[in-house]
Length: 529
Image (tube, rainbow, N blue to C red):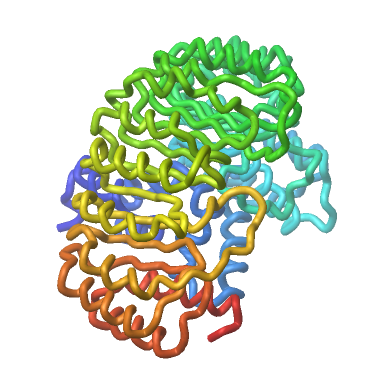
């Protein structure tokens, strides 16, 4: 009966399946194979470089290492096999020996035609793995030639590519990547046959490498339809990056990471400001802790009236009053607000009040606050309770002196599904956290948890007694409807009795096994179990 299903039905089924399940579908019959292959090869690099998502399917670490290595080699080999005869001859002319089957036969499917996402570093890495498996010595020139020929094929045949990345987006170490080889192919891509049409189709572009101004300028001439842009401003090439940002006609999502000396950053900020009114998603990240000689203003955020998501992760790059106008503006469409700050002030609290009750997700982390903690936090809790009644997720730094105030906060957050309480801001240099006993408070929290809560995380060095833990879990069992609860707490091993109680409630289905395993792994690293 499965063979009678029309392709449209199969595609509706396959689009929600995992990589592992799709591989099984390939073996059913020809029709299933043809449909499943289109989904398997939309982003084949994603599986190879997001290994943590699929480790559960591979029983041992040794097998995992071999599996990922073999899969990368196989991926590169498949794409090289798809090359036309001319490209294969070019590769062989630089000393690369291709297997006979790759010369004499063609693959069953045109795998390159289904590709939608391409990451340069991952492509470069897979080719390196393939070369190391098929050659006794690493040939950098051959490596470059193969990558170039593959790009020529992708530009000509992969008309579905919408996302092009020149950054290590998953922060995974690439074993065969040399530090000096990053975006070396990018200048050539701009001039390959069909490059103008290829870049005109790109809707998402990501780069964390240092791209020269002349390349940004060339990209600005041909890549003008980007809707989602993720870039790192290295402050080395003052003219090119602003021109690239200004050239975008449909920019809706922007993520910018600031690095280096700020001398030329105002040019980039002016380019971003020009796009303010059209942005729906904005992320600005600067992790530098030193005080800059020039501090930027973010008052232009007041012009971002169409924002749906806003993330600001800053230290000393922006003057304390840089958001004053932004705090007075209204953000009627804002559903997600994330502020990771060196100093919490009333300006940030005013921004929360200006969201008109539309917020679904709020993250507010900080190291210090402007003024007395108690006064600032009373204002913050008041703003959350009065204007954030529709929250489904909240992550909040909780100072020790405001623990008791969380009781009234929990009473107000009756729709929240995810709660993360943080002892100190989780960015910047590591700090030694003081141990705080929350035994008195924990049972009260249990009795006040929102009924639909599905995730509760304590990112803190908090401890509690066995009795308070048991009382808390009894309340979880009686109160929550959205079980099992994903519950993570601290880095300190609570003791064998706590561990056994935790496992008991996992077995009952009150707490989920995933959080139990994750807590266990943390404690194992500390060599306490």
